[in-house]
Amino acid sequence: MELFLNKKVGVSEEEKALPYYKYFTRQMAAIPHEKLKVLEQPSKVSAVPFEERNSFLKGEDTAYCQIGFGVADNGTGFVCNATYMPHVTSDMLDWWFPWHSVGSDLRYKIWDPEDHYFARADNAAYVCDPSVPVKEKTWGVNHYILEDVGMGPSPLKLCFMRPKDFGYDEALIGSDTCNSMVCAVGAGECAAAMTHKWYNHEDGVMFVSRFWIGYAVKDGQIIKALPEGGKLPVEVPKGLFAHNIKEFSNLAAILPEVYAENKDKGL
Image (cartoon, rainbow, N blue to C red; front, side, top):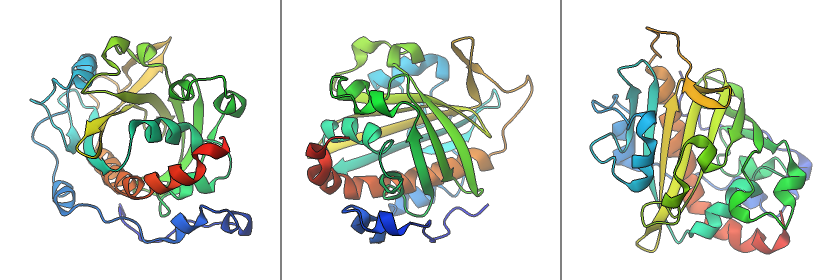
């Protein structure tokens, strides 16, 4: 499994003419050394169980893994990360998730020029509708994605959900431990439930991620999708952790500029 190839994806001449192409040409932000050390071995402590996900929003999951990856006792995989994003605001992140899913594929490529090929919302009209509050522009929208998380380019359908449909208590959103968030369930080679939350921290935000790998939607409910006794190979969460620490280190570096230059231009 190749985690860091240091080779950028292709771009078209049309993409090169866009004003944000300059972010694609930049050297990607360095991954903090301490996170590369974490990548060397699985965490001895598991992530908060999926069934206790509201304790994650409350910030009451400190007894569990905070930064790392591994395989839980029930065979599912987990990925945990926290990225300090200086000079980034909650509004920027609320804007980013819908913005990169419409328009040019370059929007997704600048996030991680080495691993992101495209992300396309299946309901661009809804995403771009100015009457839809920006925090709701991912709700019920599927993103069709092509990206490489260490095993070559792989397609993914990322089904974003309203938090309450994911099983979250929406009264917890807007708090000191969860200012805002997005959540989704991915349907691809390996199904997974995902949450990114963020909250104010120092002169920016703390961006905190959890992935529960091996969970899927069935009859409107998010359930463990692995067969009884099944166990994911640790390479799966390891590859996703490597990708996560890479892409969000880079997003933290570019987002303030990307937002300032594009926020008033519409989606």
